[in-house]
Length: 251
Length: 161
Image (tube, rainbow over all chains, first blue to last red; front, top):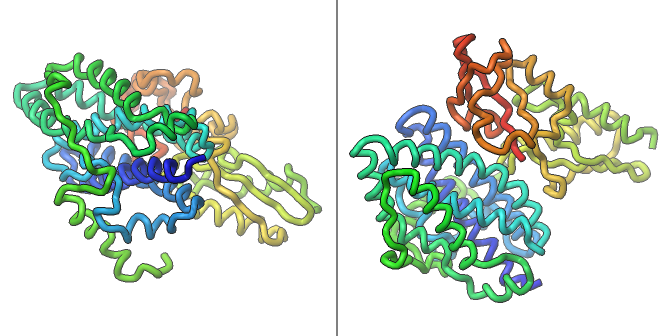
C-alpha cells in the first residue's frame, strides 16, 4: 500500500481531532451552563483520545512518538483544517463549528471503517460509535437554538455564514486522492463532501436558519498543506508549554 | 502451565474497573482474549472508549494481578481488532452496575435512535418516568438522567454500538 498516502490521510485526521479537542477543552470551566461545560469537556477527551490512537498507528509506520508529534511540531507542520484552529469565539460559533465538523467526521469514520487499510478500519469501527454522541449533541442544540428566539437564530445564522467557507476547507483534496481511492483506503474527499452537504441540509431544514447557496461559498483551503491562520501557533504554544519544559520527563 | 484460560479469567475477576469498583474487567467485556503458550500468558484488551484515561492503569493492574499469582512476564496488548460495545458487559456485570446505582445499558440493537435514552429505567424504582439530562457525564462512558418519581438524578452506563 502507498505509505505516503496513508500517512498524509492519518495526519490530517489526527491533527483535526487534536486541535478541535484542544479548542473544546477551552470550554472547561467556562461553559454557558454546567451540562455544556461537561459536554464540551467530554468531547475534548474523546477527540484527543482519537488523535492519540491515530498517532500510535503513525508511530508504527515509522513516525515519531505520539507526544513528540503532538507537542513538538510548529504550526506549518500541522495538517489540520483551518476550521478547527479558529478561536472558540462565543458559544454560537463553537456550536456551529461543532455541528459542521462532527457531521463530516462521523461520515469520514463510517467510510474509513470499510478501508482496506486494516489498522484504520478497526479503529474507525470503534470511533464511529462514539461519535454518535457528538452528532446527537450538535443536532439537538442546533435544532433547539435554531428555532428559539430572534437572537439565538440570528447569532447562529451569522456564525454559520462565518464558518461555512472554513468548513468546506475540511474537504481539501490530498495529492494522493487517486491512490487512496484506487487502493480502497479511502473513498475520497469529494464523496465525503457530497454526503456531508446532504446531512447539513437535512438538519438545517428543520430550523429557521438559511443555508447560503453552496456556489456562493468559496472554500478556505491550505490547512492540509501547513498553511494556517495566525491562531494556530499561539494554541500550540499554550498546549505544549508544559511538555516543552522537559520533553524527556516521565509522567 | 498450571493455569488454564478459565483459571486466568477467574484470576482477572479480581481486577475491577477503577471508576466502578463493583465491576470486573472480565464482566465489563474489555478482556477480549487470553492466550497461554508454554509458561507465558498473553492478554488481549480493548478500551470501552478510545480516549479512556483509565486504560493504562487497568493494563498495569492486569499485569500485577498475574505476576502476584506467580506468572512470569505476562503481556497485555491493547487492540481494536474486536472493538468493545456495551453488549459485551455480562449479565452479571449488568446486575452489579444496577446494584451500584448505575442504570445498565440497553441492548445495542435497541439503540437505533437516541430516543431510547430519553426514558431509561431508573436503577432505583425501575420506573421509566425519567428524562435525559445530558448524554455526557462524569466519565466518557456515563450519561446523566433524572427520575421524576424518585426526584433524584442517576447515571447510566451508555450504550455504544
